[in-house]
Image (tube, rainbow, N blue to C red; front, side):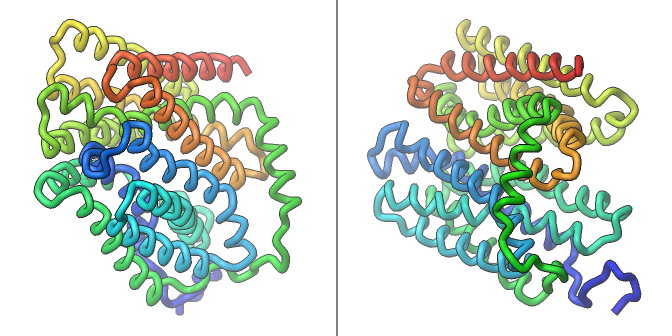
Length: 396
């Protein structure tokens, strides 16, 4: 065993494994998108019921994100990770075998709840195993997988649904979680060497109050939440509109993956130039890109000039804006959280999920699955809210 005090086990997991752990939730959120129209047809359910396949996952994950960090402080990282992975596997199998839409929705909720433990534990374990000056680099490597997984999930998801059916996407989630469980069981030891003796609910309440009282946290969390929520809401309605534009299910996966490709390049630009410029300025700039692109999409669609390829390109610009906006907004929001950065991160992530779930449900309930301008109008309002929040934050 190495002599460093920060090395707590000879079974140190690789960043590849930790990256796979935090990426499973992202896979579960994106791989299902091309499958929604197909499962809606098979179960003969309404657009609103089909949307619950996405909404149930996001809401349950939001609840989990508020709790799993505290549970790991009390009971340890390893049991929370292994139980979460086990539940994710079971939920994926149940969803794969679901005989009805209701069973599928319940399984997706359990999947979302367990996904919270995967996303959180992967990050916390990476932080536990490294010295403070190395933790940021390790976390950057781990979370980099989350920018690649959506590209792959969306790119191949459409092909999988087209060739093998929508249930195959859930089979892949089950297989991936089984592999991650086996790897975690043998390669990840307990990294929390000083667990709490009691579950301090009062500490959590105090942290919530402190974080929510920070104006900096509120404004920049709104910016990040509106942009991330916009992407989650698009997962619900974009499959239908690409189909109206003549794209097949397989083509949809490829075209829609350009959002994540744009995000990747925006994040890359942010890594090189973000620290040299005003982080708040980047947030405002990214918000304006989104607000400009969305009406262009609507205008082209209204004039029958929008094609799947052109829509894909414009969505890549929105993804690019998210790449230069989200990381900076989250970074600044955490800076305004004092000693409660962990709680602030959990609350912020939960808020992003809830915004995505609510906005997606509102869009579909108002007819967004068949009336595209409703979708664009609500997302435009979200972009405008992001601009207002960013401008107010810059005045603090």
